[in-house]
Length: 193
Image (cartoon, rainbow, N blue to C red; front, side):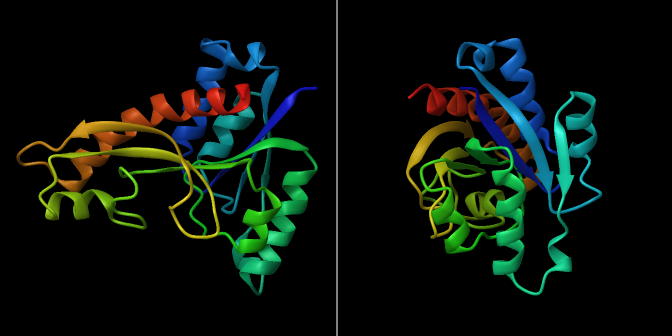
């Protein structure tokens, strides 16, 4: 049975695009009988939706602002996701904190990528915080999602140096290139087990 992947985005979807390209170019999707079944966003203006549509992937929008609570939004989002019977739900720049009920529903099949070497610097502003702390290295982490923010089991990591004179934006760009490499690899490894 085909392993369906549902990817959640809120913006440009660069990690989603890297996953789609990697699945095709490196042939891991065919080898693992996996496919990106849908890309869903909480924002109608998310630029990544156009990329997904151009690649023949089903898309959908569920505006979180139309809901009175996180719980009602997450319940509606689960209904949209479950239509695709996902083997894996991938957060790729999905800028929402998920409810414990949502996380429990997808326990063991929910991945996120975070722009720091967890457990260091969970949450926001990771690059500036790493620079301010005097770190010599930064990076990114693919992890399983748990109810506690950015503390789930680590699946993969990549390291980049912090260079003299780096701004948060310069470091973010260097980290992003690694995100595009490790996220598809981590998904392929995760689906192969």
